Length: 156
Picture 1 (cartoon, rainbow, N blue to C red):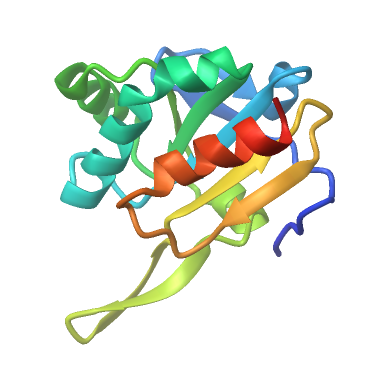
Picture 2 (spheres, one colour):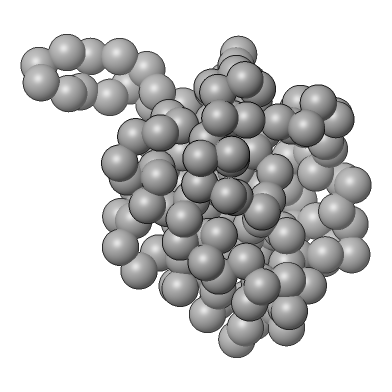
C-alpha cells in the first residue's frame, strides 16, 4: 500500500521512546514531518537525525513537529536520543506495519543479499492530516533543509 499527495495520511498508533503511545491524529492542527529511517546509530541515519535536531527550532517556528520512525525497539531509540541529544520523538514500528501502510517497507539489496527494510522516506502532513508532500528514496545531504523549505513556502 502507499499514500498519495493530497490524500488523508493514514493514522497510526506507535510507542515512542518515552513510553507514551502516539497517534498521528494527536497532531491535528500542526504540520507533521514524519520521517522513516532504516536503523538507529548507523551513519546515514545519524546524520539525518542530527540534521533534524539542528533545524528543530526552525520546524517548531512553522508549527511543525518532527517524528522519526524505524523498526528499532524503544530501548535502541532511547540510546540514539541520549547519544545525539535529539529533541523529537522516535517511534518504534517493530512489526513494520506503519512502514507498510506508507509504502516504505521494501525489498532491498546490499552486497548481494536481499532483505526487507525501510526505504528512507519523509512525509509532510498538513494541519488537516493530509499528505502535502512526500520524499522517497531520500538522500540525506540537504534533505532536511528541503523539507523545511517546503513547509515554509507551502504550509506556513
